[in-house]
Image 1 (cartoon, one colour):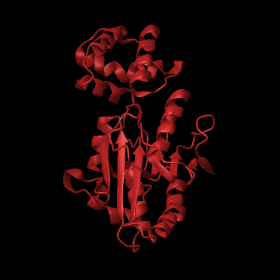
Image 2: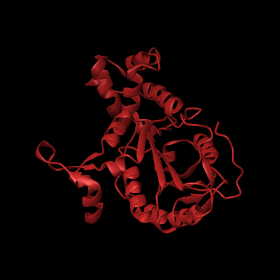
Image 3: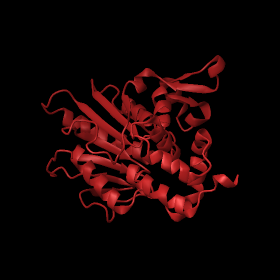
Image 4: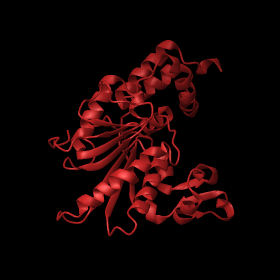
Length: 291
């Protein structure tokens, strides 16, 4: 339908709005993507042009549900169980033995705190929950909590429910699948649900990585931050600000995981690279309070 064509000028308006609100930097070639993603909002409001929808948005309070619908439309969500499996192997082989060794010092109950900054539909935090359950089995009582955040409320609802089509969990080894997932029956046949032992470890929350302050205590110190395949959508200035803020909530000696096509080159020199997009904040780094 001709009235649903996104003009170059309209695309530029939305591109600036998206960058301002959620930090995503869209290349010129993404016009068709934005057009297809927003078409449903025009149809919902029975609007004839993208300009009309843009005008509706900027005259709508930011607390209105329309902004949530808009953000859900323009964000990209791609994830899998055991995606970039070497990251989870590193947790098992290096981080957990290191944490166990440190827990033997008289510093109170051993604990581990993780933030998944951009968790999408939950496959990543559930994979790590399995990894941690297996690695800490028989190692005493641990206080393990994961914060899994995303800006898209639809994928967060899916993640919190923990229900997946059976083909989505195909990367999970069979023994772990039967151990940590329930198989659906009847109308839920062909689906599985993460067991409570996994779901109880993870708290899902909507967080805009551009918001300041972040909605947790400024004294929070994470041991691990996963931010995989997120910063690739931001421009360099936004990437620098985000990674600098990560250093404020990551404990000295903590780890940052990025996606396979992401790098800190030209973004931050605060971390030491351990290879394969695994980075460590040096143990001597002074602690800061989060902005």
